[in-house]
Length: 399
Ligand code: CTP
Image 1 (tube, helix red, strand yellow):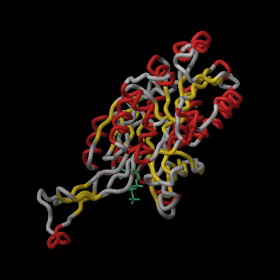
Image 2 (cartoon, protein in one colour):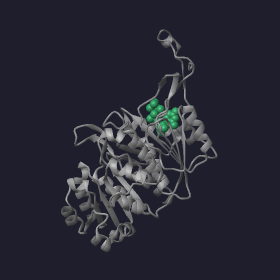
Image 3 (cartoon, rainbow, N blue to C red):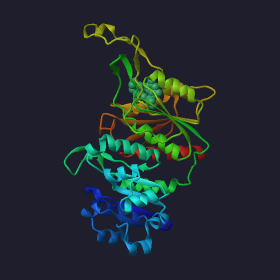
């Protein structure tokens, strides 16, 4: 079925390039046709012979190669491709793409193409968080380039942090999703609202009450709903994540601001409350920094509005589907069921936040609970959780 799908895989020069061999093998197993460009620096990590043997196609490297240009020039390589995948993508190729530099075959094809491009970056954590890399990422995202990862983890250089190439199976999932979703827009007539991230409740100008929510799960869900055609609004508390690619984003700070933004966006068809909303705000927030001598006796809290409950119990304009989360450290099912009935939402995605670095991490383990369903989803990436949830949403509306 995929025989007609051509992927141009660009392999650039990082240690993770060795994983591209497995990637080629497994994409071939899925019946994609793979053409490869191997950059000069990529040749330090994998050989053209290995790539040719696995892909079954000639590998291209040079921009000014008369034989190659005659057989398949840089324009032709782009023209025959349905998708261009750069894996691993180094900081160098990303900066060339951001600035429109084309000084070798890989960067020239990327400049000359009008096809969708996906990048799976891989680099040392310091290079990833470097300001110029972060600027380039923003530019590329604005240009419509899709990113797969990178992940947090141990690196070949011995450091630990963000910058590790996503798992080969994760890259393949993204490729498969891309082709499946190209024309699959089952939610195109729907509007969706997703809350995400933490909220901050300021005590004084420099101190606040908050939590460790990263916003990753909410962003993954919002992106997925938008991809499936839903006109999606993301209302997010402060995070250091890249912006979601959705119709509208509201950046808020406090629970009250999140609540007001939600009210403004209603009515919607689907509401997903993934935010870790602070339960209390500070009644007597001080405009001046509170001195430590008066701190304890000064702090008075008032309960924040429960956004999920408000949306779930809205009378005339209740969304057709309301989904909440339950972050628990104990009695997961019991507490989740209690939240389901007390708040009045349709589904609860419960997660045990006491384990597995779920808060802030890249993975999540969900127990899905509704009035008549109770199922355990496997520990998987937050993107994959968004996929599973979206499939359930599509089923809910179509069956
Ligand atoms: N929620 C909300 N507004 C609040 C508090 C929570 O919309 N003020 C939503 C969250 O987005 C989540 C669900 O309610 O979808 C459950 O949040 P959680 O923090 O697990 O529970 P709480 O309702 O805050 O209760 P508790 O802290 O006692 O577990």
